[in-house]
Length: 451
Image (cartoon, rainbow, N blue to C red):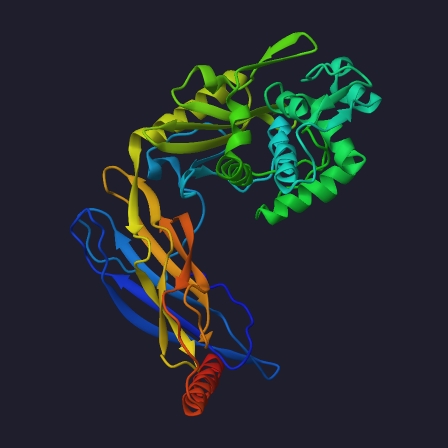
């Protein structure tokens, strides 16, 4: 069934749903015509009127397709290989178009697994963010403690930048060591200097920052991904993190594409196998632990399109590299970017409570783009979701909600929508009529639901 997200808003209001049906369109321009169907629904709980987010539904089809209607269509789960034309071997995987965040393929994308050294992306992001905010500088020097040296340095036998015990290393060099050489000692040194110890860094820095980025499932027990029951991430959230780093820290992202780094007179190559085997590959991170298996987060650009791939749980490092490359090549070969809604073009209308106008036009400030199959076989469903009715006055440019686009049953992209115009407060009579109307409709619906 169609999923409706609910929230409480100040009275008076009601739950109102708008569904937009996209009529058949037989052109590649994807111009859209709308027919509006108004639905209302509300109920009383302990004498208080509970309102829901208003949902609007527009249905689209690419190519020579007829009218689609899916008001009650189930939207669930990852697409199976036979549905997408891709046959993946990784236990968990996701392929994302970086610009829009459009998901091209996913398999068990929300399953929590040990991220191994891929978790170093979270440590790197915390440091990038602190530098951007001015809390620390690239030239700051941090001491390599005995703990960092023993657990993550030469004596550990794991991946290390070979920083000497009690030496002082700049933040810039520690980032090179953590990203290019996957140095556990570099991550521990950063965590200890910024938070006092790894546990505090994992709980108060990494977890807090992850939640700010919308990563609700990830948990962290240390800074580097070494075996710890607290280290859990999904490939979807690793993809979210990678996309954020690529888009918001372009200067720092260049580190992920450097093919080697020398520290303490020891030259080490970047562990990412895609850098030397695939055109346009420039990041991000590999990982392995016995608990998590072999995994990697990779990214490449071809013909102006950037894709991000995340795989985890494979049994062999060669399978990891092969799977990631195969998925990226499949994405570049079979998809192209199409504009569904141009910037500043009408997306729909939101109902207004107590305003000079009964509704307000909604626009997206940036184009709503989605990756679609080149053969034009995709069916798109877009739903405008907003909390309403929107209470007047409404300012031009005020964020009202989002437009969510599904491609063949999977969420592909989500873009904010804004009021295209200002709506002033209506007369006392207008507000009274709106209030009475919402109250009557709410009571009617509440009564009907009891039948």
